[in-house]
Length: 448
Image 1: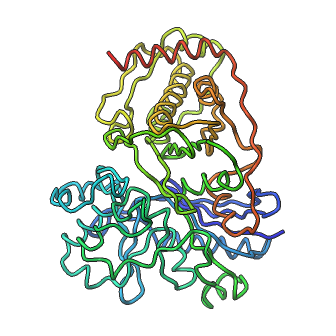
Image 2: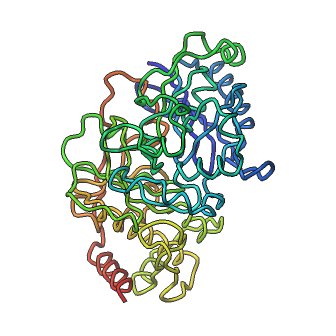
Image 3: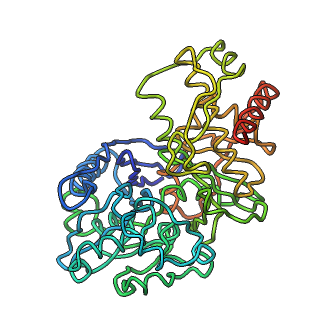
């Protein structure tokens, strides 16, 4: 049995989890908000605040349990510039609209057929971020020693070693050729090939912790740090290990990411927010997504609501939420959300929201040709109404992991030799005819 500390940085929260290797259980977890700072030249993340938090948490976990290895997983669309003095420059928030202001980038980016990366708004394309940053500050490129993707920034702080990883590079960056597994022509168009840190596979050992980290945390010198992984691919990784046949994974959080393995051959439509991701083995993965967690919070507005059976009956009689609650991304981007009939109770509102999120997920799965069982990871797996609707919609079944999985466990598995796919439990379909009738009404309304 070993204890693996996982730095897990989502768009909403920063987390340190301690995963026990034999049970894949998170035996300790601490979090802090991932707030965007507005001082400085552009909105950016609190890298130094997170670093202090991680060091303190690592020290606590080492004292209480002992730490045998460290892994990292973070959200995508994030890159950090390391200066010649070794310090990081402010890391741009990908929701900043600055990169949208210079449309000259559109003439530089490679075709979708090369990268599998659609043109996205704000800074969701890393290439657009870098183009805008270098154009905004002509001295910036000369002041940059290396460009690292976000998981490897934390690996750099822990080990002093520089790298990028294939899953982060393959996350709609425009910088990666998903088919050849090499940097795309954009790195030369931007003049940054010599600045890009080497691309490595996620499970490689990046290095060992520095003497300074060992002194501040009490963790033994020589403790290894893995290269690290993009968070949605961390959710997919456990199921790549030994699972046979076609399947899909739905990773839920701020983003709902639908990834199809071994599905039908489809032509991806970049206008509907479909794209290629690259998994931990370096292979392209047809993917579709929408900001489901953001949409959930927009409607929920912090309320703690438990729906009743009467709420469900009322919703099934004709209360529909239509897309897109968050209109900048997803398969219905640009469409204005509306209610077909006002919800009369807060419980009805939450049931209709859960059904909406499941219908959006099913739409995404269809766009990427998903076949076989659908495995739901993350917080939506605990939403009974979401799971019920999705189970009714997916003919090959919906499964939930029998034990804790998700991003932290997926990242921890990078450190475990001989790891295998976790057990899952299939969700029985209940009230399927009524749920399918409701889904048919929803889809018909979208065609009007």
